[in-house]
Every structure is written in structure tokens, then in C-alpha cells.
Length: 316
Ligand SMILES: Nc1ncnc2c1ncn2[C@@H]1O[C@@H]2COP(=O)(O)O[C@H]2[C@H]1O
Image (cartoon, rainbow, N blue to C red; front, top):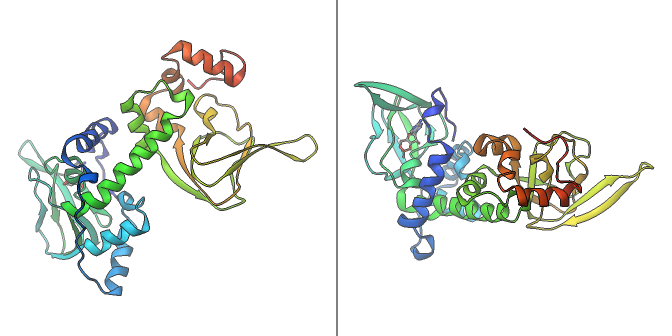
């Protein structure tokens, strides 16, 4: 979502959002039980083109596969709004998710009897929080100019966007569960990191990490194969191993400040999930502290990785 303006601090924190996510999982929506089809509102080719252009600025939809994206597009309805029209009223239940085609919109709160603007939107989307987390609308959204919106009803939103968000999150949480040096994380922390993973694609032959480069995060292979190489003494390259879907590499970036110890090259077209070390530390604090929680396990792992109970140049 493109959130323009200031006041980012009023957005839900990662902590609040993962707690809410679990609520969505546990109580309100079970995708496996919902077999009803999404609505289809037929559209012309030019309308579909317009929607696709508007959806470019909606990160929440960026992870959708092509078939789900097509369902979202067909389930959207066009709505015209006029200047000063209230599109969303704070405190009311969520009914629609909105994608902006044109116009300017303001999200605001009443603080001590005064209306305070939180965000101004000229593109992107709004109205996702009440639908994702089954909570009342967290702000009022007013059209500041005449404009055009694409709306997605709560039912269609849950069947497409929310469902795919849950699938993505549980898939990523599973990937994190397999990483030995992250075995000290609790379920809530895994969920948070799952949210922080970003999908990246590499074409066959592309270098994903380069030996000697500064390490900025670790990678989980979603699809394709990756070769791990090290430079030999005579300008040659030694192949160490080939990794497959479910495997991970670059995890030492979470532990040490040392440069990459090997290169990783896409052996086929590859999709990876990237965990940025900065995101890890913003969410959970110092990687080293997190991994040291269980000192026995930590020492065992360090011994295995570095043949010493101490990792060299630990991240602090
Ligand atoms: N800081 C913010 N706090 C709450 N809602 C915000 C904020 N910024 C933008 N919004 C949007 O305003 C919308 C109001 O309805 P929702 O709570 O469904 O979803 C909300 C977000 O899309």
C-alpha cells in the first residue's frame, strides 16, 4: 500500500498485527470450510487494464498468483465518489476493501475533539485492516476530491487476498522452522519473521550472493536449484553443493559481520524468500541475543558451524 504523509507510528506494530493475524486464523475465517465461489462482475478489456494499473501500487496484492489476481479483478466493482464523501467511518464494521483509480483520500482520527489527518492517499489502497483482522474500522477515510475507486467486498477479499496472505505466512513460517540457528524462536516470533520475508526471483545463471560481499540477510529457496561455489586458488570456481526447494543459505549473515564466505548462483530460474538482517533486528532485537537464549543449543550450533563455541565477529 502506498501510505503517503507522516505519522507512520500510528500504524499497528508488527507485534499487534501478528496477534491479530492469529485471531483471524483461529476464529473468524477458515478458508478450507468456505467453498462458495468468488463473485464475478464482467468487465471490458479496458476496465481490466485500468484495474491492473491501479493494483500496481498495492503491495498487499503483490504476492497473489495469476489465477487469484484474476479472481480479484473480476470480483471488483467500480464506485464513483464525490469530494467530502465519507468512504469509511471509524468504528464501523469492515465491508469493503478499496483500491484507488483516481482522486485524493484522507484517513483521519478524532483526537481530543479535533480531527487529525493520519494519511493522504493519491494511489494504492485502504480499508484492509478491518477485513484482515476482523476489527472495527480504525480510521475515517474521506474523499478530498471527486474520484473513482475499485471495491472488493469482505467476502471476496477473504477468499482471495486474506486466504493467500495466510497461505504465504504459514508457508514462510514453516521455512523458518527448519533453520537450526533459529530454533530458539517462539511461534509468535516465527510469525513475525514470516511476515518480514520478501519474495525475490532470479533467472538461470544469475548470481544471488557473491563471495566477499557484505552479508545483508539470508535466503530460503521456494522453487528452483541454487549452486554454492567458492573461488579456487587458480582463478577457478569450486562447486560445493546444490541446494533445492526448502533449503536455505546465507544464514551466517544473521550471526557474523563477516563477508559472504561463498557465492550462490541460480542453477535454474529460482524463487527465494529473503530475510533481511535489518528487519530481523528491528522485529526481534539483536540476532546474537535471540540465538543465545538457549546457551546449550547455541554452543552446539556454533561448534558445528565454526568448529568453536564462539562465532567470529558476532553481531551485537
Ligand atoms: N495510521 C493508521 N491507522 C489506522 N488506519 C490507517 C492508518 N493509516 C491508514 N489507515 C487506513 O484507514 C483505514 C480505515 O479502515 P481500516 O481500519 O479497515 O483500514 C485502515 C487503513 O487502510
